[in-house]
Image (cartoon, rainbow, N blue to C red):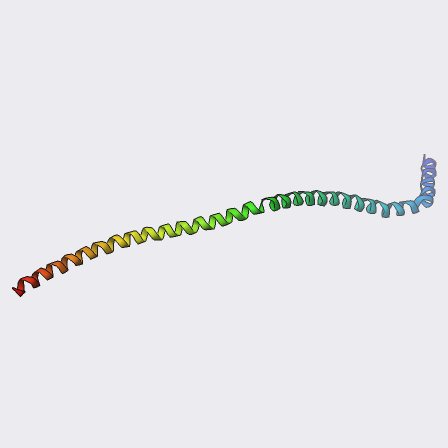
Length: 120
């Protein structure tokens, strides 16, 4: 049995010396192949992502005018709402001023009556 082990070991050593260079070559080619595969997979992902981005950009370009119009309409409506709020405040101010004018007219009317009485 020891003799068989020795013969097997000699055969292994012989094969290793003959094909040892191939192992070294495989050590270099396998990582290169692996790197190439990774780059291909990554490249496919990048291509797929770029395709998605291009589709989204196309949709944005197609609907840009709609978005711009909506922005413009929003700004106009916002301005109108602000003007209406201001006009509501002005209505209250006008009502208050009219009330004060009526009071002043009443006071002025009474004072003219008093001055008419004193002239007689």
